[in-house]
Image (cartoon, rainbow, N blue to C red; front, side, top):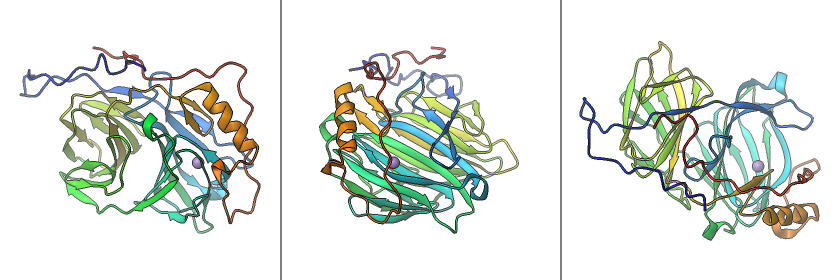
Length: 332
Ligand code: MN
């Protein structure tokens, strides 16, 4: 166990000068560029995990890409590859991705439509941008499954949230509840995932669950989150204890972000390649089974190319990771 919950302070009834509970500040996490590899040149901006933070709720991976001219980058073409212990969430702002998996799912990921795949004990899938896609722009997020559900059966869900208008914001709730809308897609731990578009000069004050920690990934423009300015591609982290968040767009152009949240995930995890386990041995076993063509991951039909071989394991034991008990850079 990481003990990550021990220094998280419950909301106090004291107030600041404006009648609000004083709250710890926003931690700004910047992205690093990661090439996806393979014959094509697509690069993503990764804000989670990083040294200062492994998880936000059960969210354990945030990749942000585009807007990319696929005529230049070649788009996305990810051959069959495995996952364990996690769910993948694909959310697009533009473009279209064709998804196939070993559950037999064949689906298209389109802007404003949630595609959620549960890996559990083992799944494999492919992700390919469609020929009609000219600009590819979106996020891929991973959710760590809690220990009791880490071997969950393969699953695939699609959901198109109705946009909710609130305070100059247009909100699409793809997981959990926000602004009066609740996604019908179930989660294994309390989670929130939503796209928020702010009109120019809009201020949106949104009720949030004080038991949740949150992350706001700014996609387009800049947004002030509870007083802290976040620029495009930055992730603002806010710890538990906040019954509302305030998002301000101070600019003359629309701004867009993805808000994720959840109750602190107080299990340590081992993340390596496409796997989330609990120990180095979990990873070694999954890797061996993928390399051996085990039924654990099934088979993806309809993809013309070869599957992706697992990379070599590091020489050292892969260490479990949790969140730091005191976030780096925290002022409290
Ligand atoms: Mn994948």
